[in-house]
Image 1 (cartoon, rainbow, N blue to C red):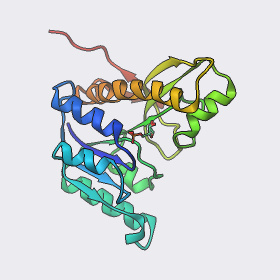
Image 2: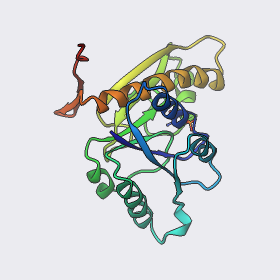
Image 3: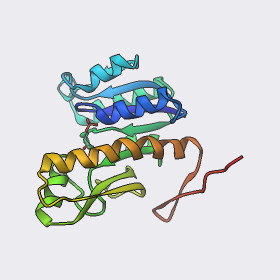
Length: 207
Ligand code: GRF
């Protein structure tokens, strides 16, 4: 699998993916990281792991479509077949999604379909405000509808009575770092299929 990482922020999920590749838990090549913020912490992560980073910021392009065309070109030049959105804040145009049909995965910090449609830390804050006793994270395929694509993996955590948004977000983040690389390996192994909008994960084949 040739995995492109797209990220906008501090990059802890990008780090978890790259550490999994380094340690052999995720058998993939990561030839490129695309970032849409010039000052994002994830650029340091890319340097640390020797992954070429491309910064493609909105203000350098006349339209959002032109920016996405450039991002697509960068990924295609690197012969990427699968994309991990590791904290990437953008809504994709259809042409971008079609270029990687059912091969763009996102990590979202809630148990979807609950608390979708917003960006961290809002989903965690909304979970706390709703008084749910279980929160968590979801790896899902990206479609035109925000946070609504087929669910590939989820992990739940308990909400503690004294939780703040920060403590809850930190507990969820630990699980993000665990399930995102794992779900990507399922793709690398060809175990994920999508039928009628539902992602199914075939059992692992053991020797
Ligand atoms: C995470 O909470 C992730 O679920 C969300 O954005 C945040 C990114 O954090 N999509 P990081 O940049 O990976 O540390």
